[in-house]
Image (cartoon, rainbow over all chains, first blue to last red; front, side, top):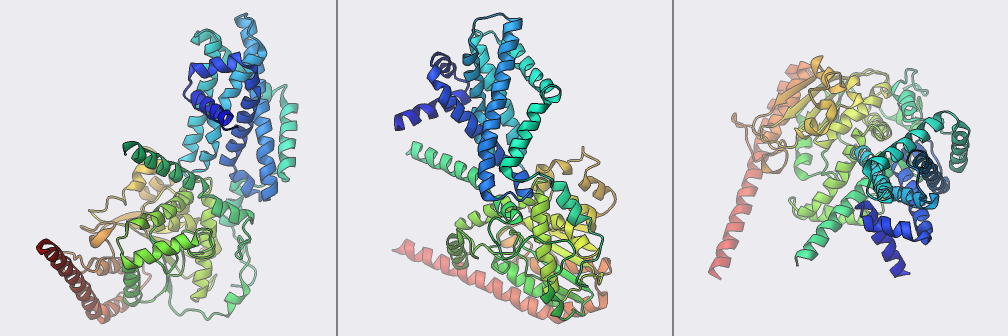
Length: 217
Length: 364
């Protein structure tokens, strides 16, 4: 058990350092599927912890909070899966190859590794910057993995990863809207709130109070 | 040995990051009602009924003091600040002083008050009482510094500052302030307390039904907080030897001169913010703004010079009467001198004791 955990931690460390040896292991061993799924789930949950202010502002209960983390993990893992499909499809069209989809999926999944530190986005003032660093880092991990699959060819890998990202972004704003609606419904159901309150509403409610307080003082 | 030191360093950094990451939970959890605090978040327009029974203060002006990041609760602040505050109460006329707010908690609960680490904070406080320069007190500073950063962070600031503003309103009412009376309120914030003062102003002005709010920062580390828009005036007192008061203008982008439309720069342009030089004063240590043993060129202790500068500013703002202020100063001058002499004598005695000890050790 400890040996297994040791390998997982080594894998995480390697992925964070963009170590090609990790990409090689992930490419060669399909049984790394579960480890990568776990990383994606934890990454998604950690990221939500970092951005949890919206849950607190809407007064989500502790049980619902935990459930939201789990659901966000699943949503995040699914979004990586969709990105992997887009990257794989772009590769098949622009640079015909025989790389199996499952291999691309595992390497894109590794992109969740930096998000294990997503909870650090909570850090006051510095957190927003940390969030941006993690996004860039995640992109670089995915790019590193795809470059490895492309036998070190950076530009084709960058085109696939970049176009894949663009496809997902355009898709979410057009034909993917029903999927986004399902995602939002799932998240709201898990959190048990409709997320009606934003931070600006707190400001509006209290900072713009014009009416005299009841009670006469 | 080196690897052990390295491990300790890494451990300390990890702990620091973890503490910073969990710091916002206190105020966020309070807002969400997670921790079952007796003091729930305020409701607009609601006033606690029992506060209506407190007689109204006759003074025309209220002054709230928010201590620096060394505070453990409203009363548990470094001794020099306590002594300074006692003298300020006597020396500032026409003013009701409100020293009861702990600005580093949304519920005004001090660190030793029903918290998970209450015993640890209590232990640190005991050490500080024995030795005012105890090194471990930096843990209190770090904890409170995170709360200052929360106040300045626009993701958490509205919730945190609302909590503190609510506490200030309650403390004012407990000292006889009538909401709706329009009596002006000045908040003095030392160090991080100044940031929390400007943050709280966002909500304080509407909660006090548009009463004029002024802030006097003593070596404050402030961001370009939205609350500045609600201030009639912000005075920033700064010492030549204070390396910390300038941190705000380095750390917070909204204070950089390139962002001319930022809240801070607009207020500066409109004359709402004014810098007041205090001479060779330091942020901490024996020559700080509250010191009784360091003196200005005209012979006043730093503590008195700071109080008097505040008094002059309050007169300039027409908040207190110049004749009354002069009388208050005259009646407390002798006491201030005696107090300063006693502190100087104490220090000389302590120094002599230390030197005698050293000599003994050398002989032995």
